[in-house]
Length: 186
Image (cartoon, rainbow, N blue to C red; front, side):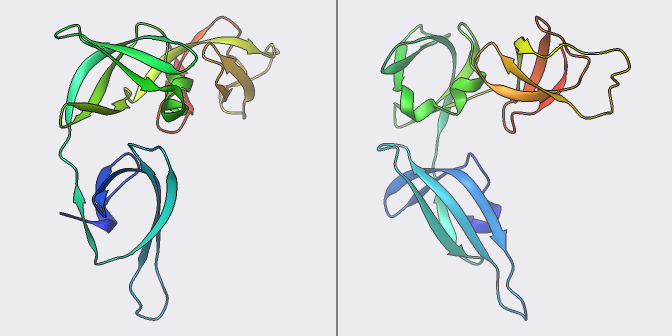
């Protein structure tokens, strides 16, 4: 069991006999001695339905026992995203709609981890950062500096983010997969 104040985005928990992935988390402290409440946004890993649930700060939920297997992202078709484990070369697929947020950071042949619960793939675990190529951005101008704001850029996966003014089209940049923010040139 884990206290609800200790759960974070990406944690898998069991609520009412169903496995959920925490996709949003906010703690709200009440005034005048009242205890805090934890507002969560939970995604059912089997159906993909997202719901909001509020817990009191003292409540506990069951953390789900999961296992990880190293895998490689192969390709995406109209309905499924295909993966292959690097240990035994087994192939697995997950529906595209379940991985919409993760696909922004995924390139073919990328290494990642598949998340299993009782021999069934329920999710993927991306590395904390990825290196992607900038395919579209406005050109920089003389005098643009590192510290002064940024400009919009489109990356090879179609993801849009803000990069510093000195980053040019065709350069590779390191992106944080948790926040989608630019970290550094690669």
